[in-house]
Length: 141
Picture 1 (tube, helix red, strand yellow):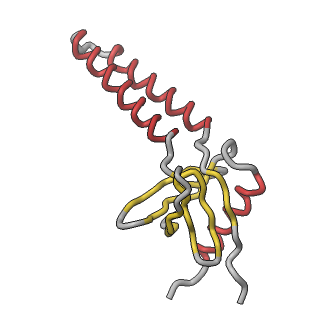
Picture 2 (cartoon, one colour):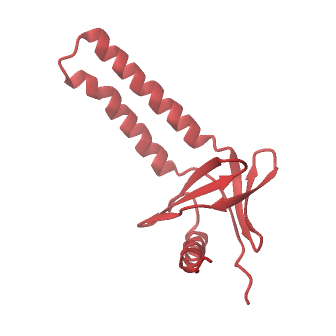
Picture 3 (cartoon, helix red, strand yellow):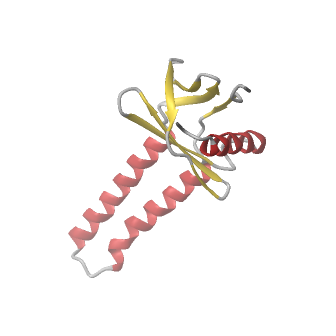
């Protein structure tokens, strides 16, 4: 029996995804101005779109965890203080060169992270994709 391959990587947010979120937020704040709504309502909707986009971008950029590692014993998430939290990789999704990881830790807490070409080097991303694909192909009993 072979042991599970180990891998560790920093959880830096993707700049491309952040830029896309800013663009969507700007488009959402401009959308009310293309309608026939009264001026106060357009202002309110634009302001709400900017606030929602800012809040989402802040959450995206300020991840509670700074590192993820996979050892023979399973996944571990390391928070900003350096504390380790055992985690379970729930449902990884691969879409082209992007890999979305959905971790469950603690009591019903979730952490989602997107691995893109600009936030993880190509070799580590390839190894992670193989590890996830191997885990998906393994029979569960």
